[in-house]
Image (tube, rainbow, N blue to C red; front, side, top):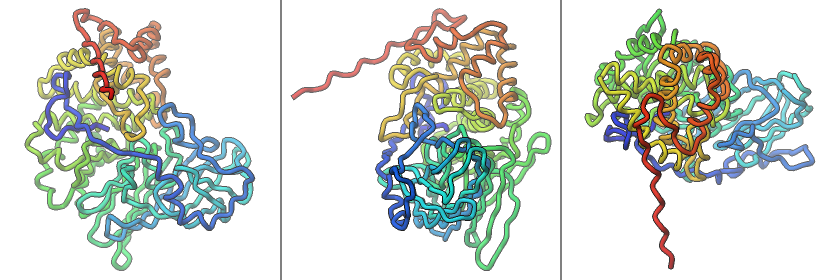
Length: 513
């Protein structure tokens, strides 16, 4: 994700960096069981102890994800009425394997009414517990058993009390923006990036609308006045990267490097105006491939939404962009190009190689920012060194306010996007710059290629990156990374001992009455 400023001005103290537009997002877990109350009133709870919300223990999102099973695939069906302020009818089928004996199955789900749940074709009882849907199958699941969970539910595109994320309402329909913890506002899931899975999407919409999702199209079947569109992923995907677009859109097809199929999804009326930007993608992919090796997924393209989001998002194979980024003359061309490359770079860093925990976010955003800045230097003569020096000057302030890059502070209760701070963007790219200074450009480039090939289609951790970097450099870099990723203060920059970091600003004294 890249949060963008409407004015296109540089980030404060960050040279020629694209500047993020701060955007207030009031978020609360007060949605809780009330979101499912209309459905759970008919439940029969078989267990003797009350169901409770669980989590996989993520430091930043403790209740996100669920232990005890591994999802292998999702099959999601949505029926859209043609009105984007009404709930969609939906069916979610989850194929999973129990990793421990299970009497209950916790799913993340928090914005819809559940009509029924089946486990392996048999009715199961269910109840809401905070933002979990707790399912009790007729028979406990032994460890290793493969199972299918079918949930018939609605999926509500209207936010509740500022709990944004999930469905994004556009001028002509819907899209998804699930990062970091909002996929379960759309469909029941194990909503944590550590549990990647295959996805199938089936979207039924009235004629005149176009539905597009992650992966490749496999069918478009018309029945009466509706069309059912089907898409399947080829590579596993984290829930936060799921994308479904429904709108009065045109899908533009072109061919990328090595015959890679590309598709862009744009508002039909804006097709001509957007084409000068869209045709840049093949050359941008070639540039990235020259840095990292072959593009790692089955397709790519831009989803241009007629909505004001304040951010762009790397949904897998189909990055989400707000239309204004391309149509507002306040944004200079180099800036838009750099943001396009930022989201493209995420297809390697964050999508193909996903973070094991949200504390590993710097690996996503730091690398995307690095290639964004490198592209701006090589294509638009925007100095990478100047940007990194400016970032160095702000780094201590960023660490004080948001935590060091490898240990970002938890988001505030009313700002679930609060983990997306400068410390994981330019602050993390600064770590990569220091690493290149420390081990040399040749070793750094080998490391980058090795990282994305070794962990392709998988999740990875900061510890694994440190280990691979040490192996590539031929020496132990544990201490180097400990200082740069976790230190309260920014270490001295290798090769630039004259760079200085500004002291964090002191908070103004509070007025007492």
